[in-house]
Each structure stands twice: as structure tokens, then as C-alpha cells.
Image (cartoon, rainbow, N blue to C red; front, side, top):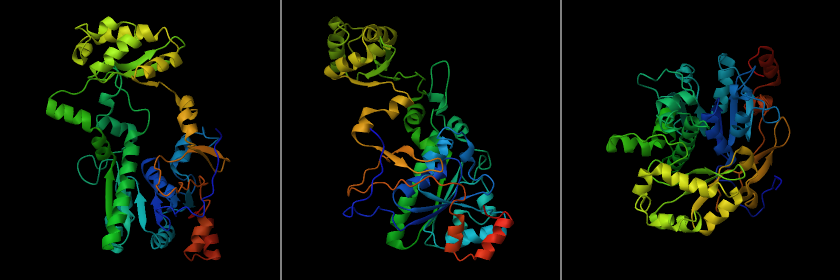
Length: 407
């Protein structure tokens, strides 16, 4: 199904964050991902970038019609102003923008925001209604506060890499999990602070660290280790304590993942899919504990049966037997996923490179409001309009541009 754009119906309610202004001095993924959620829900998001390059995520790759895929993903629906904050005039312009803002978000290198007077505590002391968010790698204090904190480094420090991969080889997550975790906690922190401001009239500072956000996501293996005494082992696609629960190759080169959650399901699998009903009562396979103890033989029995079927045939048999299953898809398969098409989840967004496909955010609102999903901005695309909106004169704009303070 082709992506499309939609115009809101007059009967549809305004988006929840309509009328809210967010100013963000942001880069990479964590803060831009957080503020994109706010933009999708109706907030006006003003993205402050450096002249002469902007957010360095603009240059990670050129995969999205010449634009960087990370940047397209995290920055739709924003206005971009290119502003040199090291120049006092640039900082003054930012101050004027902040005077109109409800929320400020930054993820500069540790200490940089404080040197500019842009840390959450300083800003909220000056304006108690402002909600200001500091996103960092490791938090303000402690021995790691000043360390560089790229996503993969934090994945290592938080233990995610230790539980991901095969028994022989740990691997990082294929997505920037630490950035996404921090971004989503920043997003939810802003929403919580908005609720508080609605009842008390005060905003206040919000702090999120990538390490602490990802450590929260590590709750299952963490509790397994600190309370159970042993760390979960890496098992690739297999489950550590359930069998069979893995992906198995099919005759047409596909791979199908299935999960047997209890012994009743095992009996159905053995009889209706494996064609070996005798395995249902075999003491080596009859219980999950036995199947885990004999995981190699269990997996071999499943692999033999599925290896004689195409992926579609395997999925049909598993569905008919009431066994949870899935096709192991790549990105092309996800882009063509029939469920996303059937639920009309694709839209078209604008960008400096022309129209691009993008998925609707997963949050569906009860009133029928659809996420705004505005265009991906060019660097400094809105600089002059934003300057004029805070009272900067044409002569001042010309001088600021000549001096490289804006772009």
C-alpha cells in the first residue's frame, strides 16, 4: 500500500501538545528522538544547530535519498535555526527563544550546557514554569560523569552486550538502544512535568542518563543475576530457559521462529507439526525442564520437520496447531509487512530531498487525532523567520549572517 498524507477532519480534536513550544539544543539520537515524539503530538519544536554543519547526525550516511537515515528518523516536524552559541549574540537569541518556551531539552557534552548557563537547574531557577531536560551519558556526578558516552559504549557499560549474541560471541544491539531508552525517558519525563506544572504552576528540571535508562531496561537479567546468583547465558535467538524457542530454517531458505510455552503446546507441536506424537510422552521431552536439558535433540527434531516445509507451510501448520510463531524478517520484509499495510501505518513526509516514507508513531490517540509528522528541516531553514519572531531586525540579521553567528 502506498504511503499517503492526510488532512485532519474538522471534527478531530487538537493534538495533545498543540500550543506547546519546545526549544532543543540537541544532537545525535537521544534528545532528537525525545523531541520528535513531542513534535508528533503537536508541539512546536525549535531545533538549535551549529552553523557550518549542524547536528552531526545529518552526516552519518546518505541512505535516505541523500539524507542521513538517523536524522530523518529523529527530526521530522521541527524548525531548524543555525546559531553559534559560543558568540554572545547567538546566546542572546537563544535566550529570547527560551522566553517563549515551555520546554528546553539539551544533550550537549557533559559540562558544556552549564558553561553556557543552559543546564536545567540554572534555567529553571530563572524561570520556574520552564521544564528543562538534561540528557547525558552517565549523569552529573560520579567517576563516569565526564566520559564520552556513545550508544555502543553505554550498551557495554550497562551489560546489554553481555546478554546479547551467541555463547561464543557477545554483540551489540542492532539499534541504538541506549539512545532510544534515554530519549523515551526524557519524553515521558517531559509529559510528567507538564502534568505537575498543570497542578502546581511549576515546571522544573528533569535529568536522564543513558546508563541509568538502559540499566532499567536490563531489569530481567539484572534481577536474575543479583538474586539468582548467575547471569543469563547468551543463546542467540534461543530462549535461555524455554525449549523449543528458536528460529529454524525452512526448505525455501527462510527462517521461522516458534515458541512452546507449556507442555500442552509441546504435545500439539509433536503430533500436528513434527509428525512424532510419541515425543509428547517421551520423558526426555515431555516437560520443559527435560526439553531444556536435551535442547540439542529438541531443536534437531523441530529443525528436521520444518526443514521439509516452506516458510509459509510451516507458519500455516504452526498456526493451525496453536503454536506461537513468526517469520524472521529483514528490513525489506518489515517495510513490506502485511500487518502495517493492512492497518494503514505508512505516511509520506516532506524533506529537503523530497517526499519520504515514514511510519505513524505507535501511540494511537482515542479521539482520532493523527500524529503531525511534519517535514524534516534543512539546516537553518527557519533561522530568519525565528529571528524575526523574537524581534531581531533585518539589519541585525544581515550582520549576524556576515559574522557567521547564524546560517
